[in-house]
Length: 600
Image (cartoon, rainbow, N blue to C red):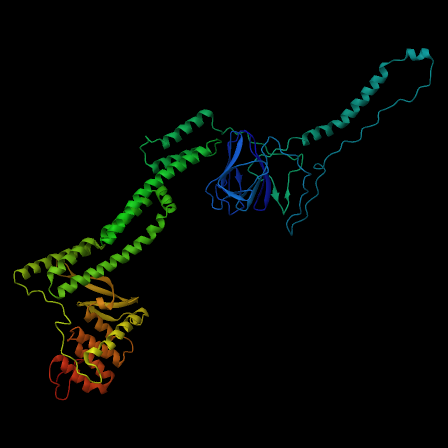
């Protein structure tokens, strides 16, 4: 396997990296378990990219990182590498120095840069770190010239004497130079970089201190924790079993088994990281597909149930879906990635609001029918409320009891033992006599709406502004308080009495949000009376509203308030009351009695 050598700049640090011979891939990221750790760069993902070698060719592959990977300035997902290429991951750069077994010739080592401001100046290099020059060779010893002798004496001289002298001189020189030669040989060792737990360089500024020649280098530990060939084969077999189609275990159980296997391999050296991650990705994708199918079906069913106003079943399905996802951490993690977390946070509130509005509408329909003794119309509305509303079981049982009593009344009504149902007030069929034209209503009945319509608008605006919070009224005999206004609707909190088997009463509070036109007329007119700082025109509008909706029991009370607001209208008011009641104007006019303006 061809080693790779890189120069790396990350988080103000610069250091070198050299891959071990035979390494299949290099993991790069901010996580501590990567081969190249870029911990000082917040833009680098935990596992940012992988650099793999296949058939002698190195290739980089982005691992779905947040900031992506760029090769020579261009964003890439996967690309081949060559010497000189520059990889950018977040704010870190990795320059490919070489793809050969040796590093290119290095330049003169960079002197140690000055430390950060406020720190003492860097110490000069120690004598042991400076290059040692061998001492000059001693000049060979030359014996003094011997006086010329006769040829006979030269023939008698010993020829080995000069050789012995030269040998002695050479031995002395060798002994002197031997330490220098040994140190030079050790300092000229190949400049290999091994990745260890300690950073090979210390950032002290724009420049980085590089290891000086001759400095001790960290060697790869000869660990005895590496998996044997048999152990690796056993792990591979276990991984194949996890992805086998014949495996009947759930995807969650398989992911749990995979995590247990990874934990077993902690502290052991192996070349299975890529296979482990690819297995995890395969299992996670399979689980995600299964969750997507179930959640999609549940979401579709919940939508249909809510559209049919079956909130009891819709909320139950949503609760079951949440419980299913929260039952297993692998499901919940994938639910977050698939966007189901937002659905689970948003939908319960939406369903609860729609369920509350449904309860209010059903009670309004039931009580409206009961007010007219229309049991035939009340029964289906109450049945749907008891069956489909999301309410406490105690309330559901009390609604069932009320339903049984209404069914008995319906039987009595059908047998003629109970009065028949009454028709609701009809403005055309039950129209009151015409109003006289006077200063109150210059155009008679046709001018009453110029007072009624502004009154309705003022009620809604006062409710929205919170000016009528707590105003009391009645909804078909049930006490109610105005809570707020929203758009053109008002919200009432209604207390509804439910009868137990022992005839005792249970008060159930529900919320009713409707436009004033959809509320009972008697409910609305009581709210009109409580509009802050009501004027003569507003009391006249409330009185006309009573006449328009047949509220003859409430009209005398509003007539008295109109008179109190402006006593000059008494004569015209007497004429209006007499006309609507179909009587002659009383002698002396109408009088005040029990908070009402009535005939004497």
